[in-house]
View 1: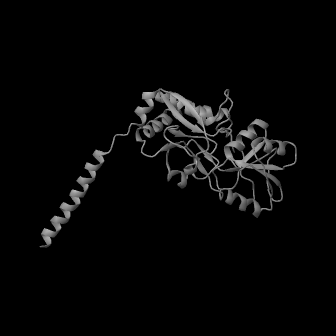
View 2 (view 1 turned 180 degrees about the horizontal axis):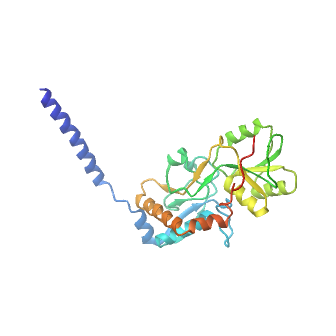
View 3 (view 1 turned 90 degrees about the vertical axis):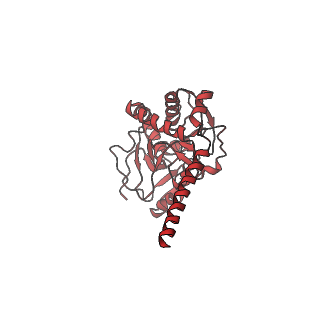
Length: 272
């Protein structure tokens, strides 16, 4: 009797595996990459502006736009950009009101986080994002400084940043955009500024200022491109394309042209 029961259990498990394999075989094939090639266009959604990732300047459109252009070239199609201000301004990709109809790839401030991966697949990481400090000269201590905070465009944790600054007695003034931050620091009304690391690096490079990441207890995230879950053939192609863009130096050249590669080099986080 035990032998019979054992055989029935084994047969039941085998039948379940066979059933699952048959069900997988009935799923429609993934045509995400072939559809892009069929229409000859890769559709990408990005914010209207998120320098240095997206600048709005046709002559120097931004890191993500240039990477997307190179990616489309690897696929052998054209690139179509759709602007969506919600990307990079909200923690939750579900609030971005995007569909497959207007974008197959999302870029311009997409961080590789648990929240993002609950909604999207992600491509390879190409840079690390976090909070960073910028100032005309190196800053050893932030205690008591007047600091402009540009946080509205970042998907990083604002609550942790607020607690960190408060713990050091920082006088925080929220600024609405990068130009207001530059004007405040350049005009002397702000001692320094804090914003997303890539933007901080770009602002520092443009103005000949100093920039450094804030201490590691403030979380850092990889920057990625977002892809729809289930678009496996497109994801594989994006992964392969990034391998090629790294190998031929295209990715490094794009990052360096926006001063991102120099971000934090020769600098350390403020000694706090």
